[in-house]
Image (tube, rainbow, N blue to C red; front, side):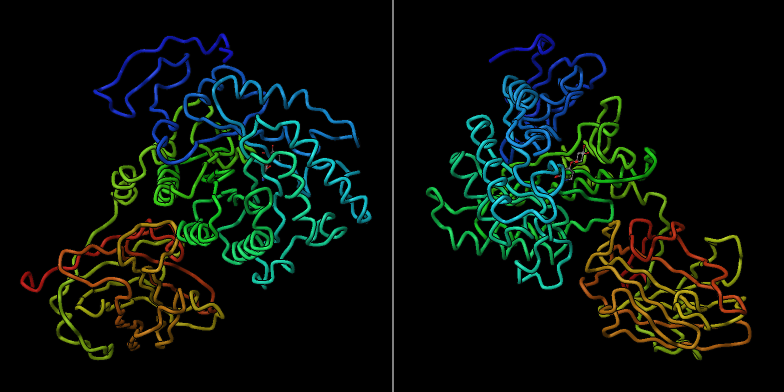
Amino acid sequence: MVVLPFLLFPACENKKNGEKTGEMKIMPAGIENLPSLKKQYEDYFLMGNIVSGPVFESPRFDLLIHHFNIATAENGMKPDALQREKGAFTFTQADEMADKVIAAGMKMHGHTLAWHQQSPGWMNYEGIGRDEAVENLEAHTKTVAEHFRGRVVSWDVLNEGVSDNPPLPEDWRASLRQTPWYKAIGPEYIEIVFRAARQADPEAKLYYNDYNLDNQNKALAVYAMVKELNEKNPDAGGRPLIDGIGMQGHYRLGTNPEHVALSLERFISLGVEISITELDLQAGADSVLSERQAVEQGIAYARLFKIFKEHARSIARITFWGLEDSMSWRAAQNPTLFDKDLKGKPAFYGVLNPDAYIVENSGGISKDAKQVKALYGTPRIDAANPDPQWDKAAEIPVDQYLMAWQGAKGTAKTLWDTEALYVLVHVNGAVINKASQNAYEQDSVEVFLDENNGKTPYYEKDDGQYRVNFAGERSFNPPSAAEGFESAAAVHDGSYTVVMKIPFRTIRPSAGRLAGFDLQINGASAQGLRQSVAVWNDVSGESYRDTSGFGILELVSLSQN
Ligand code: XIL
């Protein structure tokens, strides 16, 4: 192994009786002494990141080899980097890169043999004939895969061959992206490129790689394609044609990890290996990441890594697409684990120890959340003559305005029993109007409920939004939340009252339980336009899709009544 001079920094023993994460090195100036991600995950999967020229400079390269044991060339092995002119392969830079990576003790993954992007114009242009296309595809694939044989452990053979959100995903052929390769050759181009790669490098694991695979339609199309091609080619050099599926993993705070898990499980059922190949997670904008966003990003990464750990037996590798934020292809959205000074962001700690991070920080997001108690009781659903049981319940003010105009506001009360949460809202100061087409712009009240108090930045199965206007008209998010819901509304002089019965959908309520909870009063102007919004706790304006800012409702036992 060649040891590069800047790798010769002194190491110090810092091991507590064989403790796994204890070993630390003195890092060059500018890099924190953080536990190593590759060590932390050595029993689970390979940990990867991307390389390009600037990554090989110290101290970035030190950070890279401290945390990662496999590298992908960000752009250096794409078709336009290796064969810009037909027949003239340019391997020098990619070779240098691969050699440095391997010399540093890391593995190398190849990205990518066929793609409709970053490919030279001559290779797969619109209108190219079938024979020429097949010849170009095979020649490139064979030459490149043969060249790196023995140096890369796996290849993205085809990148992004399926369309986004295909309407008929079971028909994978109809779901293929209309690229020049597809138009010239037809669906068969996929087998052609995988066969060529297998022939040229029989050892390398061959991957189909794509983005947005948390979209269930796209995932289903990829599933159907890999299933059929592997069933058709069970013995392509001793094994099925496609070894693995790469989920790129370009995510956002709003990405629902349950969708990622669903796709993962679908792919695992095919018996192929899975890698997360280009992981990043956007948070904030304009290269600004607020403290709250940074913690939300940490939690989002942690939730993903919990899922990845649970499926580790089928996951070969997790590669991040960018070492530090300023180098990312999505730099303005701060998507990586390290900041521009190479310091670990909250995202790093979310990845390092997902369970602990979630426990320590979920509360952190909502530490200023208001909390109220719901007493036990089953009131009649009557707004004109409210049940006397409400008399014992405490009043919750709904009077924090989200907009400049200070219109309708009110007070609410809550009760619960084993079936449902009951909410009574009394609204004052409303010029009542429901002329708007949009239910949320009519004079109405909304209850937000996060049954498991998960504080997720997106809605899960246990989350719901329940809206009733002054005339008793209801709307729900998701629509299925309507099931079993009951309500009543009554208008008085310049005010109105709404009573709701919200059945618990996913929990068995018991005393002492905490639920995420919020209230909103929408005030319309005399013209029917949205004029004001008053809430109890969550002033983010995001309650309709993000539960992390909700207040907290504690279910209190009978005996405390
Ligand atoms: C990106 C690189 O990060 C950028 O430097 C380049 O300008 C464009 O490509 N999916 C892929 C990657 O498979 O190759 C892309 O990489 C990101 C999306």
